[in-house]
Length: 71
Image 1: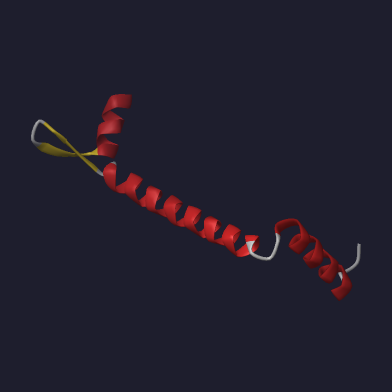
Image 2: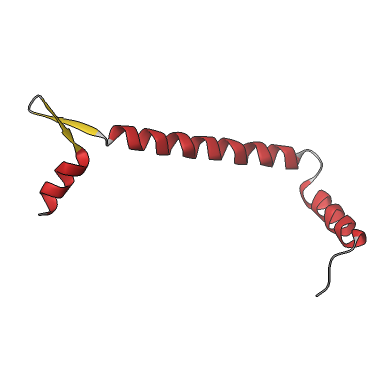
């Protein structure tokens, strides 16, 4: 279990290129980047929608409302 030599990395690179093809890797990385962006956007939207709610014309903090519902 020593360190990997340059030949190990060359063989791994050749195998990866043979499996995925030259054009597939950038496309795959672009899809990963889009997924991360959509995840961050979804997390941001989720936080902003649960911050405040209106009940009978009053603005109520959702965390306080959740605490009332629990106990």
